Length: 454
Image 1: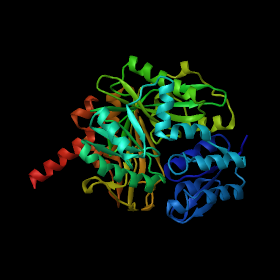
Image 2 (image 1 turned 90 degrees about the vertical axis):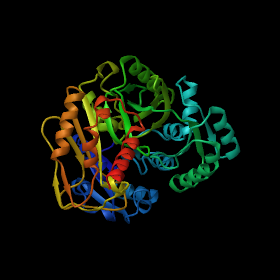
Image 3 (image 1 turned 135 degrees about the vertical axis):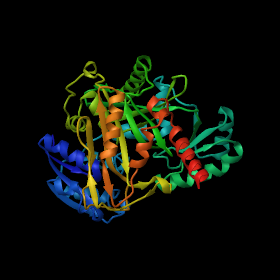
Image 4 (image 1 turned 90 degrees about the horizontal axis):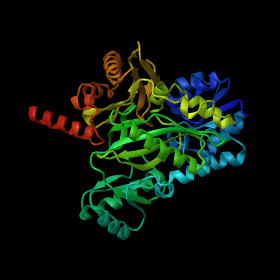
């Protein structure tokens, strides 16, 4: 049992955790960097403590500083949010050894699923299909395997995600150069250069299954999320349920996700991710052992507060609902609004927000930490607003999102709002027939149009 929670994160997810803790009657402490001193999470937490300078490596990723702050403030539990230390095995092991409740899965869960090769090996053992692949650091072996499964292939970092250390390779000639590039990126981003090679699927959908497990062995799976609208492997728009998943495929995805989570004795919230090919065949690609950025759309269509129950499960509570209680209630779509300039190759756009008007009305949810006059620092992820629309069906949800995108005003910086307005008018998106490559093709066609008109 714990009564005080240390929030080891920043931005909208830190604020989301603080709100759930307040509803549960738990006091909160936030550890903040010097760059985040004037943010809403720092303002609204019961206690605050500076954990270091602006760079994440010296603050939000500084394990000794975070542990020291937890001990100084006498917090009994820590919520890592997503990113930063949320899937750091060393941090979780230190918490476990120090008697600090980590509001997330066990270190063993993270170890099994954090390494892509080990995760796929575990999936194979419980008869969950995976994309054919090779894991290791020997270039000659990797190239031989790539030739066996056939080009194109994907090279990706074994430890990590977010598109870093990841490249599509079309031929053997490209392989050596891109292998070395990916290895350097993996070492810089994750501290190790192990890579994974897998078959590249043409026009796949990125479908994921949210789940939650308690400490008594109960596993509950939730309606799927379609995360196929992405750029360079970074998700931008997500929706639930997926417009391409029928009842038969949904049951299959539920079964695979449940089987894998049950096999590893998973505790806490987590997400099983799949690629679904043009024949509706799903392939397991990885598991994210944390709360996801896009969790709000699952909360809306299921009616379950995932962050609240993540905290309760960590406390030792039994899940108060069963699988038969989980149904699809309407439709929800999330846009990740980033402080970026799409017209300038998505370069970050930090700075002071001079005007802020957030949308509202029926079917709109806003998760954000920004306010008018707030200065977005240049040190962290560019996500500033999660704009969520929901309705009885997909058409109503899209209409509400279009209205919300017209209403929202963020001045002083550039954002991805204009891009989303164009996407939500495009016939391919409206039809629901998009794949993981659609957005990049759409952006390329826009650039070609600009060149022709110049």
